[in-house]
Image (tube, rainbow, N blue to C red; front, side, top):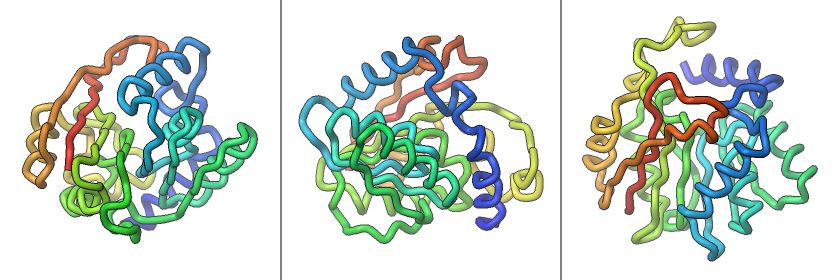
Length: 214
């Protein structure tokens, strides 16, 4: 199943950044995301882990804000594009091919873990949350950018495995918050991410930011 997921995202890497949900298409959109990240992370340099980093959307933004960033993804073609973009922007980011559910990183090594539209792709999201909490320092933060798409299109490889992905199509914010809280995170909060500037248009389904502490 995970090999099918890897194949799917490897194939999509070439044009992944052309969609507003995946790349920065306008100056206004870039400014909106920089402002959001500044508000969340603050000015001090943090150790940031970007899970399911893809072509580096969040990794590049956090690194440009002078945080120490590690980006992990299971699709090597996505990572190759992320490395090229980091090099072109003169940013020092560590990119690692890895499984989001079983990350071989030191416990209590991260100040902030971020993910964007990733947890729905995982066959074992609860295992992933336990793993992510282990990687955070005491009081470290989790930041999840998620949404609820409802009955999502079952295309390509996902048509064969969607019924084995518990969070396929996303989840309402209250349900996602309850899941995160059940896995030992504290101070769980949710805020809408419906600002059209973030996506270049008003989203057609609920999008939100979930934050929590280890």
